[in-house]
Length: 210
Image (cartoon, rainbow, N blue to C red; front, side):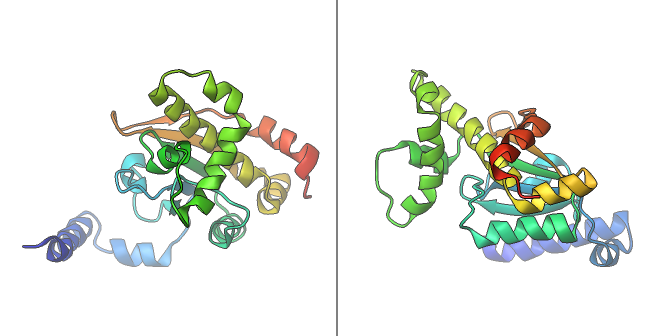
């Protein structure tokens, strides 16, 4: 059996397994869309959002792109943010990067990738901002991992800069923004424990959008 046909066989088995556990699982899922989390992650096929978090169908609203970028010129991610905050009223927004990210690696190289350069510039801007710290790290893999972490922090900042986030938090005290890194070598999620309130206060000194 080729891989394409195998997908539908696996789907059939998955449906049967879910219905054994809960007869009306899919009907209930259809009628109830109330996730507490918005997950913004990388498109990398080795980082499946629901699997690494252990969350089930309906628990996680997901947006993925190369290197988990939150760009103020990307109508896709901005629409996802507005919808998740104003319509779904999620309580938590997570930016999840991962060690071994191909987008981060490409951005570190002084090489052109054509159209992709426009996307990689978002990451290269992060590098430029933290160049002094990063250039002091002699081990290339450690520098690479640190850029993964700093990119997560900056994308969290980009979320906090938006009017949707600021207005919702002022009125409702949610959502809270979190930064995670997934270690593919161990399968473990690392909470970067960013200080959301401090970041919000720092951002509002310039980006106050009440």
